[in-house]
Length: 283
Image 1 (spheres, helix red, strand yellow):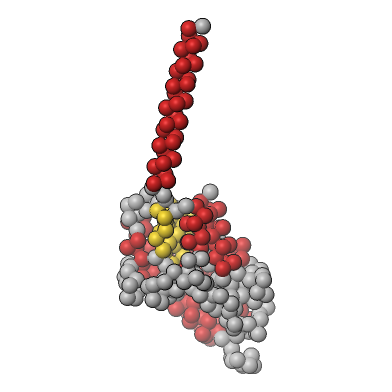
Image 2: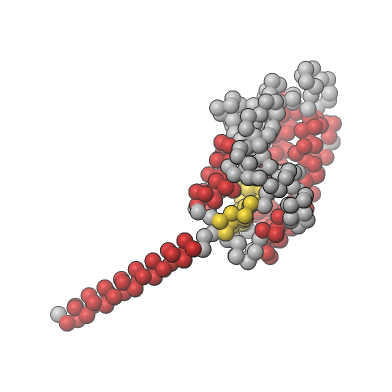
Protein backbone atom coordinates (compact mmCIF):
# COMPACT_ATOMS: atom_id res chain seq x y z
CA UNK A 1 0.00 0.00 0.00
CA UNK A 2 2.82 2.42 0.81
CA UNK A 3 4.40 1.83 -2.60
CA UNK A 4 1.08 2.42 -4.33
CA UNK A 5 0.48 5.61 -2.35
CA UNK A 6 4.00 6.84 -3.11
CA UNK A 7 3.57 5.99 -6.79
CA UNK A 8 0.27 7.84 -6.92
CA UNK A 9 1.76 10.85 -5.18
CA UNK A 10 4.71 10.85 -7.56
CA UNK A 11 2.42 10.56 -10.57
CA UNK A 12 0.33 13.49 -9.36
CA UNK A 13 3.45 15.57 -8.81
CA UNK A 14 4.78 14.77 -12.28
CA UNK A 15 1.41 15.60 -13.82
CA UNK A 16 1.38 18.90 -11.98
CA UNK A 17 4.89 19.74 -13.21
CA UNK A 18 3.94 18.71 -16.75
CA UNK A 19 0.92 20.95 -16.57
CA UNK A 20 3.01 23.87 -15.43
CA UNK A 21 5.51 23.26 -18.22
CA UNK A 22 2.74 22.98 -20.83
CA UNK A 23 1.16 26.17 -19.56
CA UNK A 24 4.46 28.01 -19.62
CA UNK A 25 5.15 26.72 -23.12
CA UNK A 26 1.74 27.90 -24.33
CA UNK A 27 2.36 31.36 -22.87
CA UNK A 28 5.82 31.47 -24.46
CA UNK A 29 4.41 30.48 -27.83
CA UNK A 30 1.69 33.09 -27.54
CA UNK A 31 4.31 35.72 -26.71
CA UNK A 32 6.65 34.55 -29.47
CA UNK A 33 4.60 33.82 -32.60
CA UNK A 34 6.06 32.36 -35.76
CA UNK A 35 7.96 34.97 -37.76
CA UNK A 36 6.86 34.77 -41.39
CA UNK A 37 8.51 36.69 -44.23
CA UNK A 38 6.82 36.86 -47.65
CA UNK A 39 9.02 37.54 -50.68
CA UNK A 40 7.70 38.10 -54.18
CA UNK A 41 6.19 40.33 -56.82
CA UNK A 42 2.63 41.33 -57.76
CA UNK A 43 1.26 37.77 -57.62
CA UNK A 44 2.26 37.72 -53.94
CA UNK A 45 1.39 41.35 -53.22
CA UNK A 46 -2.23 40.92 -54.34
CA UNK A 47 -2.13 43.92 -56.65
CA UNK A 48 -5.53 45.53 -57.10
CA UNK A 49 -7.32 43.53 -54.40
CA UNK A 50 -8.98 45.80 -51.83
CA UNK A 51 -8.19 46.93 -49.25
CA UNK A 52 -4.74 48.27 -49.93
CA UNK A 53 -2.04 47.79 -47.31
CA UNK A 54 -0.70 51.24 -48.14
CA UNK A 55 2.95 51.97 -49.03
CA UNK A 56 5.44 51.63 -50.39
CA UNK A 57 3.98 53.40 -53.40
CA UNK A 58 3.82 51.16 -56.44
CA UNK A 59 4.12 47.83 -54.62
CA UNK A 60 0.36 47.22 -54.68
CA UNK A 61 0.18 45.17 -51.50
CA UNK A 62 -3.26 44.11 -50.31
CA UNK A 63 -4.24 43.16 -46.78
CA UNK A 64 -6.08 40.23 -48.40
CA UNK A 65 -3.12 38.76 -50.27
CA UNK A 66 -2.16 35.17 -49.57
CA UNK A 67 0.64 36.04 -47.11
CA UNK A 68 -1.81 37.98 -44.95
CA UNK A 69 -4.41 35.23 -45.23
CA UNK A 70 -1.88 32.62 -44.11
CA UNK A 71 -0.61 34.79 -41.27
CA UNK A 72 -4.12 35.60 -40.03
CA UNK A 73 -5.24 31.96 -40.14
CA UNK A 74 -2.13 30.61 -38.43
CA UNK A 75 -1.44 33.43 -35.98
CA UNK A 76 1.93 34.25 -37.55
CA UNK A 77 3.72 37.59 -37.36
CA UNK A 78 4.12 38.70 -40.98
CA UNK A 79 6.75 40.81 -42.69
CA UNK A 80 5.34 41.28 -46.18
CA UNK A 81 8.20 42.34 -48.44
CA UNK A 82 6.43 41.58 -51.73
CA UNK A 83 6.25 44.33 -54.35
CA UNK A 84 4.66 44.49 -57.78
CA UNK A 85 7.17 44.31 -60.62
CA UNK A 86 9.90 42.73 -58.51
CA UNK A 87 12.58 40.61 -60.11
CA UNK A 88 14.99 38.32 -58.29
CA UNK A 89 17.56 41.13 -58.27
CA UNK A 90 15.23 43.10 -56.02
CA UNK A 91 15.74 40.55 -53.29
CA UNK A 92 19.12 42.13 -52.70
CA UNK A 93 18.71 45.62 -54.20
CA UNK A 94 16.19 48.39 -53.54
CA UNK A 95 13.34 48.42 -56.05
CA UNK A 96 11.81 51.84 -55.42
CA UNK A 97 11.69 54.58 -52.80
CA UNK A 98 10.51 53.11 -49.53
CA UNK A 99 10.98 49.53 -50.74
CA UNK A 100 14.30 48.16 -49.47
CA UNK A 101 15.86 44.91 -50.69
CA UNK A 102 13.37 42.18 -49.84
CA UNK A 103 16.02 40.18 -48.03
CA UNK A 104 16.11 42.97 -45.44
CA UNK A 105 13.06 41.29 -43.93
CA UNK A 106 15.03 38.13 -43.13
CA UNK A 107 16.92 37.43 -39.93
CA UNK A 108 18.15 34.61 -37.73
CA UNK A 109 14.75 34.60 -35.98
CA UNK A 110 12.74 34.08 -39.19
CA UNK A 111 10.74 30.85 -38.97
CA UNK A 112 8.97 30.71 -42.34
CA UNK A 113 9.66 32.18 -45.78
CA UNK A 114 7.49 32.04 -48.88
CA UNK A 115 9.04 33.12 -52.17
CA UNK A 116 6.97 33.56 -55.32
CA UNK A 117 9.17 35.29 -57.85
CA UNK A 118 10.72 34.80 -61.29
CA UNK A 119 7.92 35.63 -63.74
CA UNK A 120 9.27 39.17 -64.23
CA UNK A 121 12.88 38.12 -64.78
CA UNK A 122 13.86 38.46 -68.42
CA UNK A 123 10.57 40.33 -68.99
CA UNK A 124 8.83 36.97 -69.43
CA UNK A 125 5.47 38.01 -67.96
CA UNK A 126 4.79 41.43 -69.48
CA UNK A 127 6.92 40.83 -72.57
CA UNK A 128 5.07 37.70 -73.59
CA UNK A 129 1.72 39.43 -73.07
CA UNK A 130 2.78 42.35 -75.27
CA UNK A 131 4.26 40.11 -77.97
CA UNK A 132 1.27 37.79 -78.11
CA UNK A 133 -1.51 40.40 -78.02
CA UNK A 134 -3.68 40.63 -81.13
CA UNK A 135 -5.43 43.75 -82.41
CA UNK A 136 -8.55 44.94 -80.62
CA UNK A 137 -10.74 43.62 -83.45
CA UNK A 138 -9.24 40.15 -83.16
CA UNK A 139 -8.53 40.12 -86.90
CA UNK A 140 -4.74 40.31 -86.69
CA UNK A 141 -2.84 38.31 -89.30
CA UNK A 142 0.30 38.16 -87.20
CA UNK A 143 2.34 34.97 -87.28
CA UNK A 144 2.04 32.76 -84.18
CA UNK A 145 3.65 34.32 -81.15
CA UNK A 146 5.86 31.29 -80.52
CA UNK A 147 7.36 31.61 -84.01
CA UNK A 148 7.86 35.35 -83.70
CA UNK A 149 9.60 35.20 -80.32
CA UNK A 150 12.00 32.45 -81.43
CA UNK A 151 12.30 30.73 -78.05
CA UNK A 152 13.39 33.91 -76.30
CA UNK A 153 11.15 33.48 -73.27
CA UNK A 154 11.96 29.82 -72.74
CA UNK A 155 15.63 30.77 -72.79
CA UNK A 156 15.01 33.52 -70.23
CA UNK A 157 13.26 31.06 -67.92
CA UNK A 158 16.31 28.82 -68.00
CA UNK A 159 18.56 31.80 -67.23
CA UNK A 160 16.30 32.64 -64.28
CA UNK A 161 16.91 29.17 -62.83
CA UNK A 162 20.34 30.28 -61.61
CA UNK A 163 18.78 33.38 -60.04
CA UNK A 164 16.28 31.22 -58.13
CA UNK A 165 19.05 28.91 -56.91
CA UNK A 166 21.02 31.93 -55.69
CA UNK A 167 17.91 33.35 -54.02
CA UNK A 168 17.23 30.14 -52.09
CA UNK A 169 20.87 30.02 -50.96
CA UNK A 170 20.56 33.65 -49.86
CA UNK A 171 17.50 32.88 -47.76
CA UNK A 172 19.26 29.95 -46.10
CA UNK A 173 22.27 32.07 -45.18
CA UNK A 174 20.17 34.90 -43.74
CA UNK A 175 17.47 32.79 -42.08
CA UNK A 176 19.14 29.46 -41.28
CA UNK A 177 16.29 28.15 -39.12
CA UNK A 178 13.46 29.04 -41.52
CA UNK A 179 11.21 26.67 -43.40
CA UNK A 180 11.35 27.78 -47.04
CA UNK A 181 8.43 27.42 -49.45
CA UNK A 182 8.95 28.22 -53.13
CA UNK A 183 5.45 29.07 -54.34
CA UNK A 184 4.47 28.41 -57.95
CA UNK A 185 2.19 30.50 -60.14
CA UNK A 186 -1.52 29.71 -60.67
CA UNK A 187 -2.93 29.08 -64.14
CA UNK A 188 -3.47 32.43 -65.84
CA UNK A 189 -4.58 31.02 -69.20
CA UNK A 190 -6.77 28.10 -70.27
CA UNK A 191 -5.08 24.97 -71.52
CA UNK A 192 -7.26 24.94 -74.64
CA UNK A 193 -9.14 27.58 -76.60
CA UNK A 194 -9.26 31.29 -75.91
CA UNK A 195 -11.67 34.04 -74.93
CA UNK A 196 -11.26 36.96 -77.38
CA UNK A 197 -13.89 38.97 -75.54
CA UNK A 198 -11.72 38.91 -72.43
CA UNK A 199 -8.13 38.29 -73.54
CA UNK A 200 -6.50 39.65 -76.74
CA UNK A 201 -4.81 36.39 -77.73
CA UNK A 202 -5.48 33.80 -80.41
CA UNK A 203 -6.13 30.21 -79.35
CA UNK A 204 -2.64 29.22 -80.47
CA UNK A 205 -0.97 32.09 -78.66
CA UNK A 206 -3.02 31.39 -75.53
CA UNK A 207 -1.72 27.83 -75.54
CA UNK A 208 1.82 29.15 -75.96
CA UNK A 209 1.44 31.52 -73.01
CA UNK A 210 0.16 28.64 -70.90
CA UNK A 211 3.14 26.48 -71.90
CA UNK A 212 5.50 29.26 -70.84
CA UNK A 213 3.90 29.33 -67.41
CA UNK A 214 4.21 25.55 -67.14
CA UNK A 215 7.90 25.88 -68.03
CA UNK A 216 8.33 28.53 -65.36
CA UNK A 217 6.64 26.41 -62.68
CA UNK A 218 8.64 23.35 -63.68
CA UNK A 219 11.86 25.35 -63.33
CA UNK A 220 10.82 26.66 -59.91
CA UNK A 221 9.95 23.17 -58.71
CA UNK A 222 13.25 21.79 -59.98
CA UNK A 223 15.27 24.49 -58.22
CA UNK A 224 13.34 23.92 -55.00
CA UNK A 225 14.04 20.20 -55.15
CA UNK A 226 17.73 20.74 -55.90
CA UNK A 227 17.97 23.01 -52.86
CA UNK A 228 16.01 20.56 -50.68
CA UNK A 229 13.20 23.00 -49.93
CA UNK A 230 9.47 22.62 -50.51
CA UNK A 231 7.61 23.65 -53.67
CA UNK A 232 3.97 24.70 -53.43
CA UNK A 233 2.03 23.83 -56.58
CA UNK A 234 -0.67 26.43 -57.21
CA UNK A 235 -0.98 25.75 -60.94
CA UNK A 236 -2.56 22.29 -60.74
CA UNK A 237 -5.40 23.24 -58.38
CA UNK A 238 -6.16 26.37 -60.42
CA UNK A 239 -6.64 24.67 -63.80
CA UNK A 240 -10.22 25.39 -64.83
CA UNK A 241 -10.25 28.67 -62.89
CA UNK A 242 -8.20 30.74 -65.36
CA UNK A 243 -8.83 34.23 -66.71
CA UNK A 244 -11.19 32.99 -69.45
CA UNK A 245 -13.73 31.63 -66.99
CA UNK A 246 -16.82 33.40 -65.66
CA UNK A 247 -16.52 35.83 -62.77
CA UNK A 248 -18.01 33.27 -60.39
CA UNK A 249 -15.49 30.60 -61.41
CA UNK A 250 -12.21 32.32 -62.18
CA UNK A 251 -9.37 32.82 -59.72
CA UNK A 252 -7.45 35.05 -62.15
CA UNK A 253 -8.88 38.20 -63.72
CA UNK A 254 -8.94 38.71 -67.52
CA UNK A 255 -7.12 41.32 -69.54
CA UNK A 256 -10.32 43.24 -70.30
CA UNK A 257 -12.58 44.52 -67.51
CA UNK A 258 -10.85 42.89 -64.53
CA UNK A 259 -12.84 42.98 -61.29
CA UNK A 260 -11.14 43.89 -57.98
CA UNK A 261 -7.65 42.85 -59.10
CA UNK A 262 -5.33 43.95 -61.88
CA UNK A 263 -5.58 42.21 -65.23
CA UNK A 264 -4.15 38.71 -65.64
CA UNK A 265 -3.50 38.47 -61.90
CA UNK A 266 -5.13 36.42 -59.13
CA UNK A 267 -8.27 37.86 -57.53
CA UNK A 268 -9.35 37.43 -53.91
CA UNK A 269 -10.55 33.88 -54.53
CA UNK A 270 -7.24 33.08 -56.19
CA UNK A 271 -5.28 34.34 -53.19
CA UNK A 272 -7.46 32.32 -50.85
CA UNK A 273 -6.66 29.20 -52.84
CA UNK A 274 -2.92 29.96 -52.79
CA UNK A 275 -3.18 30.51 -49.03
CA UNK A 276 -4.87 27.12 -48.70
CA UNK A 277 -2.03 25.49 -50.67
CA UNK A 278 0.62 27.17 -48.51
CA UNK A 279 -1.12 26.13 -45.30
CA UNK A 280 -1.39 22.55 -46.58
CA UNK A 281 2.36 22.59 -47.25
CA UNK A 282 2.95 23.64 -43.65
CA UNK A 283 1.09 20.54 -42.47
